[in-house]
Image 1: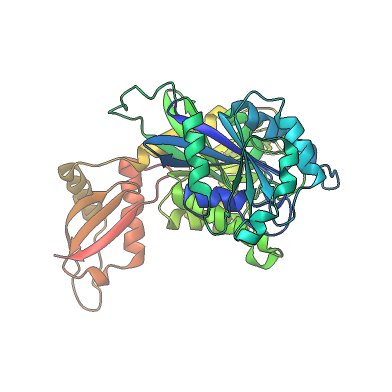
Image 2 (image 1 turned 120 degrees about the vertical axis):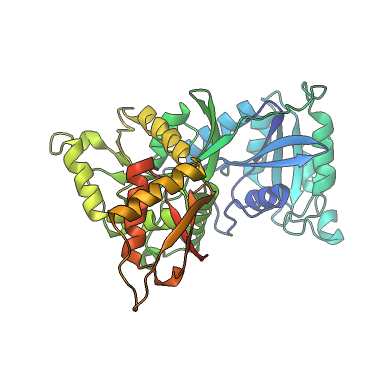
Length: 441
């Protein structure tokens, strides 16, 4: 969170519409919204701009007195941490259900914090329903805001008052003319591989809920960190499952959320459970990351469980054997439980990002290609001699090269692979997918 961003938390009991409200304010569908109570478990962050100021909105898990699913204590801890960081709090109530005992408990808890609290009654989309809100005055608030997150009603007035109430100490400062480039790093993998634990070690705080129950993280959670003077945005995603194993609607959202997180990231860490090893699903996830043009780092988590059975070299060989299309990706060994190898992951992510953004001077590139072609030319294709005359780098992120040929469609796939491997051998591009585009001269 930059100094200019003010943090606003949304709290309330489960299923009052916090995620819908969150999505409405930040302007796009980021949080999972579903009618099942308790869908949001982690703190979900989203930024929005209003009146020239930046705000960070936090969608917390719902207050709950139930201990059945083992998450309630963890969720309460998350909410308490969020309230400590907040500059203002939106207490969301349900106008359709009316005042509930849990609402009274939350109101009592909020009186103990020294932050401005705004009472918003959601699902008020008609005059008749607005007239039925008298019971809420029992909570003792000075003002109530009638809103409908689903239809966008009344939210503007609420946000205006919040903006006025928050004293922005940096309002008089000029915006920085130069901003540090934020490198976006995602953590993906099958459920229960320890992604949230790795993220917690990176963050140095229990920002994510961590438990041994598979599928704890359902949304993608963005968190900013500074590492070695670099600004990073960390995305801890929901576990990716095979389509055949998606039983609930919420799980479908989670897979979609993980895919969107990959698309938003610069570098993606594929987290693999060391005891399980890489399988077909890890190969599919790696292919997804590469096809999206993202940097790839393979992280073997829970390394302490198998360290006596494998050497890093042998395990790395097994990874490349089972996921051959990811053989250009570095492999890092870590144990979130012991806190080992975590900095190595971030260092490798930054190294991969440098490779992703590498640009090769045209003269140097063509000199290298002349050497590649001299060592191994293209055989005749369909009775025609195929030549590559010239190469240029079109862009970085990912490194993309345009090759000009007399018969671009006749350049065989195995020769394209040869050129890609030669580029890697000559220039590196560790962890970076390479794009080769053939064009007619």
